[in-house]
Length: 357
Image: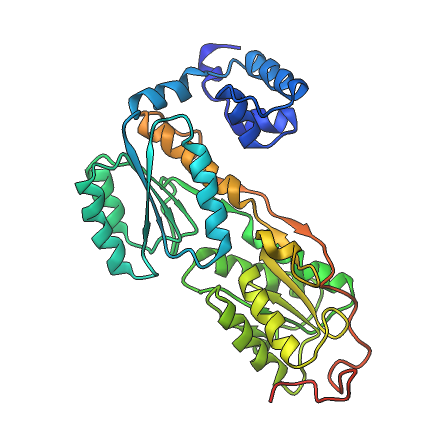
């Protein structure tokens, strides 16, 4: 393999060829002991055969040995964000970099104020989680030579903006198709903030699945949410008050699905016998609640790790293979979904009216 092509080999490609996760390859590159010998040998062989330039990681580490990166998030209320932070922490292990965590609380003005802090502490790079659409902020960072990577943005990003995402449209479509396969036809969705690209993509995936199945879109079944538990609860109450309630609810994220659970529990509507529920994220407690939540898995840890890997390369003065990386989603089936009840809009099994009071 020639020198030019060897520089284009990525850790993600090595991981795919070895049949392991990206963090596993990273642990091998860092010489960490927590990798099985056979797996280590397979990865080492692929690294050698591909001509992977191991000096890239060490060069980034030496260059930024006493530096800092800023991780800017909206809040830590959502466990999904915590998983992303864990991925970022793992990504900077062994680099000597420090991590500064800042919060915007969904306030665009706060992001602008954080810019002054970034300048003051001499930050080497920035990762935005759920960034507001502020081109002026990005231009300011570039003007000061501070690289950045964005995940879960609002608005539209130019094709040259470094970003990490997941297959939101495909994941939402997968969720609805699964409910359709169980026999559901009255499927509601509680979306996330419509200012976020991921929310719009999930709504589009929901609509596509229904349209492909020949089911008319009922606007009453599409409810606005904000990715918080309370909105899941509030919008479920509104859905149950409809003259013809849904038999299944697709929550825009797992935290909203917990709000759905709460509303159903208080009305003695059993999951999944009387209502099927599916979420999006696969946060750690999705498999712990009862019944276990069927959900769309997005690789939250890998999102943080990948964003950090991209940022380290930019900080080392390297060119990314692609400014946009999109990670796959997949369906995780648990116990919260089942075929619809025979007469969902009449009475529940205890004889109580099947709608919110």
